[in-house]
Image (cartoon, rainbow over all chains, first blue to last red; front, side, top):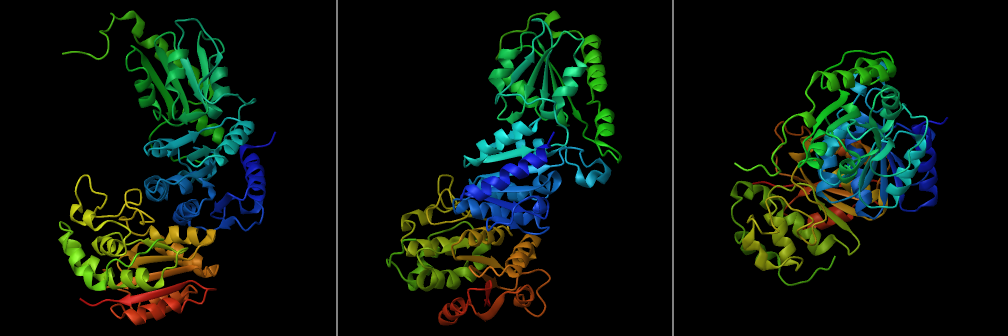
Length: 308
Length: 212
């Protein structure tokens, strides 16, 4: 099966050749995989410049795609993203490769599990975390047709099958009292494996901003929500809290811990170390479900808003 | 851009005095006044773009825009107020004719590179102190290496860079493949000729020296 990254290069390369509005802005990464074209601009290793150039292209009516490794696309030029795109009210499509720890052997400098939280702190971003190359193609094609700010987070980790749908999609329904386990992007297959023997409703989410609050409310029949995000743990916790502001609930937020993790090795080793493989997810769910009093067994809470 | 001939250079001091509350940046504003006037009065063509990267002290910019009829003179006294479109740093979403929002230094030149790559001729005003920001040099290097002849920068050199530019900042531009000229930033004819010296096949920088 092709990878998300290869599919991105194929679709983006065709887009720049067929659509006079599309431009590609690169910082050496991906140059060999993309066509030589007057609107493919390789700036060299100048990542701050990539965003400024994208803003200038957008001011002139082009639809720039900016591509690099996650830390060099999102973190290094963060102020450029905030000001050159957001404050100028300009659009661009940022496509990262490397996800949280795909570049495990490269160490912390090439890892950026904070990316979704960082971009989510800025207004107006649509953030996609696809779980399959087919989803990458669908999201990229949709993004190229717009003028807004879109982030597409590629990963070497891929689910076996693509999931259709833009919002929260229930892939397995448990009992009404069962916990709702929301798997984001490439975390789906591990989550499905982790919950195979559990009474759980499993839902999939590949677009995390804007967060499908209505879909979450509809899918949740009980009180327990578990988030499995393949990046910084808790990144979408505030979205869940906002979605369920008037409903008693409790939340387990799984993801990459906020810590300096000084390990190399393989992505699978990092996934296991962060408790994001099937065994780790299951262990966290078991501890959470069995160690605390469930919200639906405590006395009924007063209706929201609370009054003094 | 539509440019009217409503007011002249001699009206600018009065237009400046209408804007109060940012006196600490008076020198920053005044240092750009002649360059801005020459650009808007003699140099910019209708299809050109102008980016004020050095967003500090924009009262001179607002005064020139008002003199040229791009913003109403009546808005100048509202400078800095809660509901005014004119703030201490310009916002392109609030002021017609302002092509980028600026204030944080080192953002204009990279955006200008993107505009020039898309086609139009673009002028970008930066300060010598602003050039301390490393982001500028990513833009300067790239524009020079690819011969981005539609990019013209003007450095208002009022000698505020903390550690200075030994030998002149223009040498850094020339090293990266730009054409460069240093002139008296108060000499309007010299400014006009310096902008006209752009060759079109290499990026060009005009260093406008301004003394207090």
